[in-house]
Length: 446
Image (cartoon, rainbow, N blue to C red; front, side, top):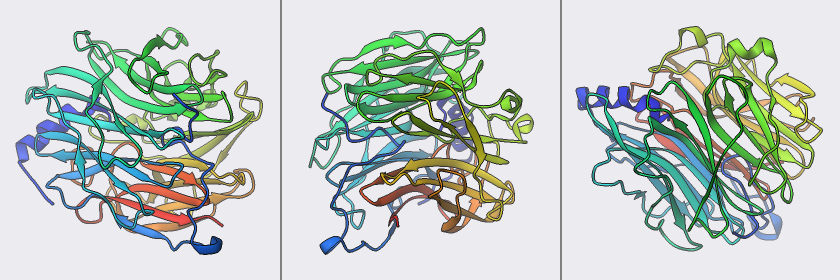
């Protein structure tokens, strides 16, 4: 969830006091994965689907915003946010048998002064090392913020738990908030980026970091300005082959911006705008959708909303359209934009994700429902084999609640997780039909 909105949520939860149950990379974050073999059964027989609750009852008010990574050896790592009464934690869990069984839930430690941790992002390098990033801070009941930082923790291959967190930001810096950190392994090392808000919270710049020594040290740079308005957030990076990578984020000047890197994410050329100018007024400016890439081709999933004018910090906007943009010239221009939401699934959508298979097929997941509070909504998977023109869907979970409010135990968060690896699609999402829990659904693709 966006750290900018945790103050309001913390105050509501405190008030109610409720409780209830550097080598070449194999992948980059939640944007998509490829190259792993051997997850199928004997002699290539398909594995049955796995559909399990990963976040066992934890005493959290609710659990949301799952991220997921699958290593080249088949290890699954998931992380998510635990919303407690007056506090927020980051939790993680590991499976070494395709999601059938899981190790103990690990809660990542905070500084003694901090009480909020959120915004998880995961990535894995080729040797099976997993890195987790998140943001943390102290928020008082009156909304004062301090002790702000972005952190990275490392999970070595076969280790049962992440090591001690490393703070990658300057604790003495004057910052309004750090938001939406994103980590990805590339051909050249580890890429990390996050939005840094001014102390007035009226503007935000994007800070990009890079490590070539496994996260021990980090270089720092800022993306060049795209115009007069200073707002950049929701950063996500997707890899093509070799040193090629693409970066997307919401941007006040370009709506949603796309950058290209030819050195593994260490530097980027000029950005282009992904949406049409007439779509700017329908953008939610939240972290929804993502990008996938192959060579000169890059696909970007984003949402449009007719609810933007009425949405506020206590409510996420529903999406009236899911749009898939495609660039076939290495990110120099956008050649097409196609609506890919299933109109038979529901009038509105939430929290879409995109993945690409080695065959070229594209997968999307999202919530669909009739509107805010619909308790018969569904979480869906769509698969396209025609280059992203059509995405017939199947239901992964129903009923779920189509919840837009941030200040309820049914809150879904701001994003879900989706990766494809070795013939299998792994979806991490929230089932909020009763107590909210994090679910893994893993299924072979045709």
